[in-house]
Length: 314
Image (cartoon, rainbow, N blue to C red; front, side):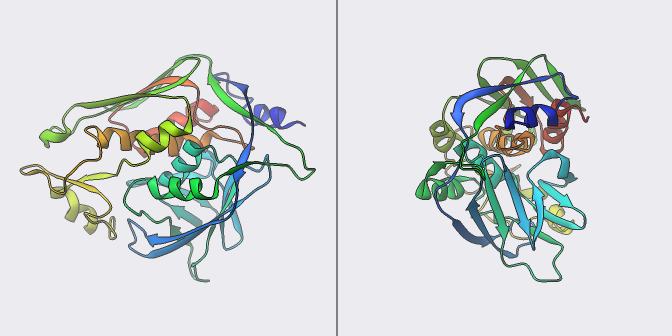
């Protein structure tokens, strides 16, 4: 079976997607990347090595020789992050790294977690400054190269084109997508208890990886100061600080200025969405669907529900 056939076969139950050639060959990174940093939720140090991979392999995590594909099939709901699980092994907070890989055009790679011990069953990707900028800069440093399969051949890069409207929602959170010949995303947030975060939107059209690296990758995650202790009591954001998040207060507004852009929180939501949508990829294909996508008050769980809807498993 050809790569194109394999990708179509993987989603044959879905009538919402048409897989089409992008006119490009699949890519991988030009050399290994290794980075160490503190993780957001556990607060532990974590070291990640990203290595080139063969065309048609896709993106996957290697956790103590347990291989976990970066696929919606292995995603599980977890608070404030995206987690991949295979058997008893989990990799948490994968969204920023996967967003950088998808946004930069890294179709195939192996992602190893290096500093786990024999007793570890869960690891977490470093948070760095709360954006995907450091990952993008590391990818730019080693560059991209055309990926070859085990027979030394190139493989075409496919993209999933939406063929009919899709809608998922939970309460007043919603994601709606319409067929289009280009990928555009409009994302809205509304935290009425914080004046700086009330009813804000950002819209963008994705033509090249340069747009992602300049306008999306630098956008940091954000939080509301008055909710921090509640999250920490729940065992979350133990590694969170003003160095890796934009912090807003209900009474004092932005506590650690300046913002990197006026709509930085909305742009970060798009960053998260791209990382979660990348889980739609198979066999080195593009994960982010070609569609006009409108999201309002979404989060990782709703992003995952959207991807499952596309794949016909929702």
